[in-house]
Length: 415
Image 1 (cartoon, rainbow, N blue to C red):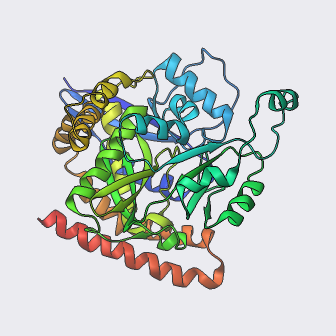
Image 2: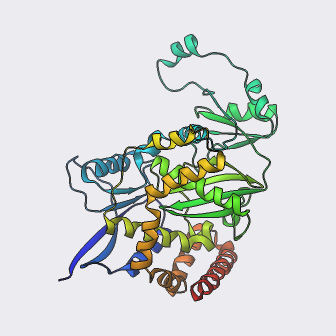
């Protein structure tokens, strides 16, 4: 006898409308999914923020969070939901709160990844604490900023230790610019980081065990930053970019994250890989937007249907044993780390499960992207994002890129 199970996926949102609307539409097309003698159905709900008792029940089985990196009330609700109720979270607020970009640099250096030289400097301005004056007078050691920067070389970058949306990032070309940027940093705690002469700037978006490495051009306007370029890296560099992204995510328990890397030939230098709220806007991802929404839906469905459990504790010693093995060179260590990451994400099981239970999803996403509903979403997003005199131009721009995805996806599905 067939039984029915309905899974609620919660969306904890801020100002975004485009990807949540797309996600909701795709989720309506997913089910029902039959697994054994159980028929699984899926619903979504945009969650509200309200007072809660620590023993209150939590209805969603999984929550996709876009608020906790800046809004503390829902962040603490997420922690309660995870610890008390076993709710699955994308992402973990525990490690994103304690393991910001600085911690990620430290961990990846410990694993032997090629992080550019990085120096943490004290606050430029006093922090708002009555103990600051006494503590700094007694224990803060004077330093020469230019002397610290000299071994890194110019140009270099000054950026906040916790980062986020390119906030406070400055390219420093000389000593004058160094002092100006530091003076303007105020109470932000800053890194100085050496740069690398690179051929390509790669940005990888990872959702569960799926990763898309994209040709990213940070100097361009947002709508032009992601180039549609499928073979912009060598096979070795492309494999490393995927591996680094998944290793970082598995190490910290992150499942919805983006990583940035500088690539020179076959050498990959990770420079930013702790983004609690990665960009998934249709007006920036454009061509890659359907993949992102499909991957998010696919991983969410897999997690709730299989009953995947989320660990709060990390298994860092497994990685450190590999890091400390003198018999392994860089590439062998990377392969060993990736094996641990694939175990964490159940990569083989995931793809087998999707092939068996979600074979229709590719066609459903393609059908939706060619629908009037998607066109309405795109038009509404463009109207909300750009001034009236630019809207026609941007609509044509995004239609062209998404039409290209439709052609490529249709050809891929035809085999």
